[in-house]
Each structure stands twice: as C-alpha cells, then as structure tokens.
Length: 417
Image 1 (cartoon, rainbow, N blue to C red):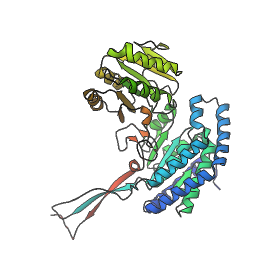
Image 2: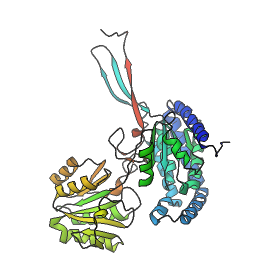
Image 3: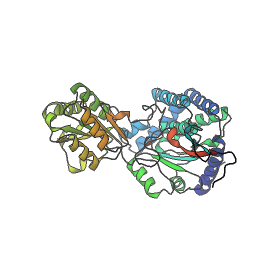
C-alpha cells in the first residue's frame, strides 16, 4: 500500500517502478502491446456504467468549484464519449508499431553498415486537467511507443481517471505486460506535480495538457524536458478569393463546434476587399450562433480592444479584424499567434502558398476548420498533446513522436585507419 502522505517517497516509488517497466516495454512485441490495448478497450466498454458514475462525482466536484461551462464540457463523459474512448484505444492499437522501424540505412566506404532505428523515449510524465479521456489517450500512445507513463490527472477528473486507469491496467495484465507501464498518481496533492517536474532520474519527458496556468508552471519549473503548447490562439484568415460557402461553414465550425479545445478559432481576420460583404456575413453568422464578436473594422457584438487580440477565450467569444491582404494577416499572426494552428480560406494558390511559407506555426491549414488540429484527425489514433516548440516533436504528438532513435552499426572486423 502506497503512503499517500509522504509525497516524495510515493513519487520516487512510482518513478522507480516506471523505469523498470520501461526497460521491459522497450522490447515488448507489437502483438502484446496490441493485445493490451484491445483488452483495455473491451474493459472500458464493459465498465462504462462505472466510469459514467465516477464521472458524475467529478461533475459534482466541478460544479462546487465553479468550473466554467467550457471546462465542465471538457470534464463530462456520457456513453457516446466513452464509446469515443474505446474507439481511440482501438485506433491506437491498429496503428503501425513505430518501435524498431528503420528510419534510414546506408553503407560507408569503410565497410560499415549503419541503420537509424526508432526506440522509445523511456518514461513519459503526463500532467493534465479536466479531460478524463486523456488518461486513455496518453496511456495508449505511450504503451504503443514502448514507453512507460506516469499520469497525473487534474483534481476535477480524479474519479473518472481512476476508473479508466483501472481498465488500462486490466488490459496490461491480460497481455502479461507490467502493470507499472501505466501508472496514475493516486492523490490530488499538488506536491506530486512538483516531484514529477524535477524527477530527472526517472522521467525522460513531461507533457502538460491544460490551461495557460498549468502549462506555464510546467515550462517554468520543469527540470525534465517538456513537450507543450502554452496557448491555442488559432487564427482563421478569410482571403478576398475565398469561396463564400466554404468560408461561412468553416469559420462557424472552427469557432463553435467545441469552444473549450485548443484548436478552437480565437481570431477571425478578413481581407479588406470583402469586409462589407462576405466578411460581415460571416460575423453575422457567428453572432446568430451566439458568439460574441469583438470586432475592428466590422460590425460585431462590441468593438475590439487591444487585449482581445492574442487572447485564448475558450468560450463563445472571438476577436475579428480587417487586414489589408494576406501579408497583413501574416503580420498579425506573427505578432499575436501562439504557433499552434492557423487557417487560410482561399481559392488562390499563390495566397495559400505565401501563407504556408511565411508562417511557422505547428499546423497550417487551407480551407479547413482549425478544429481538425487533433492527432485522431491526423490519423494518429489519438494524441498525447500538441507541441508548438521546434525541438523533437511538433504538432500532434502521437506514438511516433514519442520515440527517439539509435544507430545500429555493423562491421566485419572493421578498424579505423
């Protein structure tokens, strides 16, 4: 029985167990990992009533804490969302196993044969808020990529995460893989987060998923490397050559489908030549759907203020502005963006190419909703998070992005002159 009062000792035990499990997972066969994930998916579906009951406790806790409607939506599980968890587990299970893949190989004049081969990172720490499905997504992706994972869910999703985690462990044991491959920190004590951030002897990378406060804390205090994005300030630029029907549908979806996710559009940019026509029509569409539009150069719900640009609302609110052209949009995004996701709506290939070339956000889209900024929608089965940095992983972090590589070098009694 773990001592939940002694947090340093608790986290040290969890870390040591994860490191031992990682050593075994590094050479676990693709078949056993697949079996564990399918077993976990079946366990989640069989336990759906228990999971939804546990989630009801979390929702009550969230209401007591005064969580916003967007945060409550992130937290809520129903049968459809549990089915989504099951589908995600099965999707990850069916993905190609990245471990052992030969990325490149070549021969040298010296007689050496060199191969660059994918290998797991080791132990991944995931610190997240609200969304209990992250428990399944992160556990599945880490297992698929041969990594052990330490999950520290938010206090809001404590009961839901425990119920889902129990199903993941059931999958592991059914496939004869170590239970410590996927561990959930069994306490709401925030000291556990501090211990994870400095556990360089146990954890190889930290992935935070949550709001600006959490991610900022992790990036500031972590001694372990971090894959993260601080904010999802996503822009949609409507060019003068946009198709009106496409543009109206895409903008409405990008803002309103789910406002509380990091891929939700937070700023609408409109070419000046269409501001009074299509641009205003799109603003009217948004307001009719219940969105508060804080506008500059357009007739919105209220005039935009300086602080509305570069702001992640995560709500039925969007900033809107008229720009001169594609270069004006690019300049605005470069000033206010968070390097997450930006979209251009246009039928003009040159404008789209300029947008794609001049911006360096992790994800750039053309004629598509920013709500597609998601590992599942990218064919990764799921994602452990979106990375906006430029080192190692970028964009949706799936199983492949949770690997590193090593060089396998073969000679034949080869010596160096």
